Image (cartoon, rainbow, N blue to C red; front, side, top):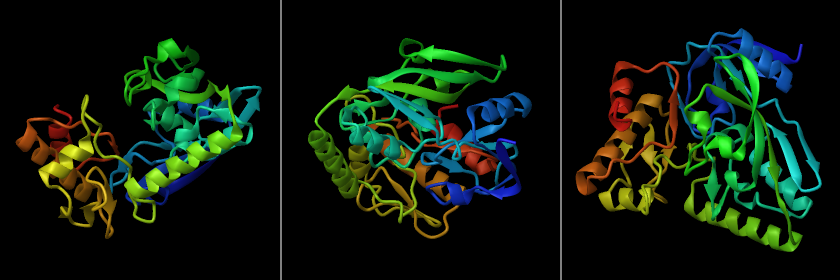
Length: 301
């Protein structure tokens, strides 16, 4: 059997926020084949990867959960890297550096996996996943079959791919990088790490990365700072003093604490600038009535 399964599994230990209740069943496939079989046989499972930009409900998850963290296979041939969805992106960046291949430098400090990076078209420092993306295989959960999508079919945009709007789950992806100077690649990666260290909390302060997307031609962090959100707290959650677009789990925060704090930040920017920020993090799992109302406001449902 190419997967493991656990009953009543605690998800909190997998999330970078260190927040999350239990899943009734959690499956850990090792291969793309096992992952596809689980997607075909389970009834609408929730798929989680690096869990670095999600808030998992403290009440837990009703659906079966598939965790991709055991899917670590990758191949490098010439300038191309093929990787399963569960591969951690900093590892891919380091492998590219070793082979003197450029295009992945921006991912050196990311805590997420290939699946999440492609899903949201991760970007930083003027680089994005879409720059090097060639093609991927996805599982269509409606038609129960595997499809291959090229770059054009992915409809990449800012923090966007077609995976967000279709019943597609990424299985693996292929990227084409550019040969470069190892010295230059290493220097860029070092600069990126230093920037992240200066501008973002490390994971000793549990967080889920940027909370809101940047509006067109503006910065969510700038708007939030000017609106005065630094120092705000709710329950165990607090806005990080180093950058206004980060929430840290300061003291056993719950998903409700984070949701209330996000809503307060959202409303303070809306009241000051009439700009409605869009959440970058996703909420998954069982929503309480209050959480449902808070998220419906922010997602304008």
